[in-house]
Amino acid sequence: RGWLLSAQINEFLKERYGVDWFENRDAGVWLKELFNYGYKYNADEISKIIGYKKLDAKALIFELNRFKD
Image (cartoon, rainbow, N blue to C red; front, side):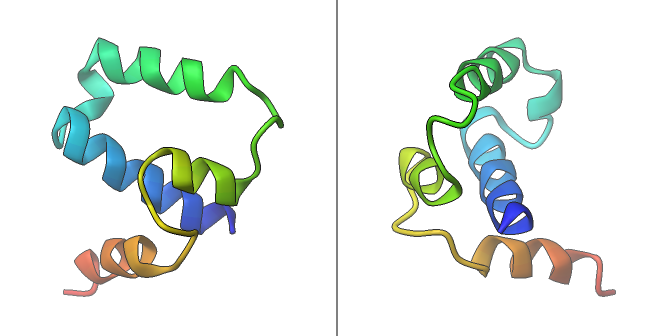
């Protein structure tokens, strides 16, 4: 479940802040705000907060297939 959410967050950050999101100060601010809640939200709720219908493997499968070749 952690890998699924991580892949969704990574996809979200790329869409919102670009491929080099990790160099974007606003992305860092957003991540700090998200994780400032601690355990208030579970993985399913975070997935919905960032715009997904549910926690699923699509983003993770896409990410893993990038390294296939």
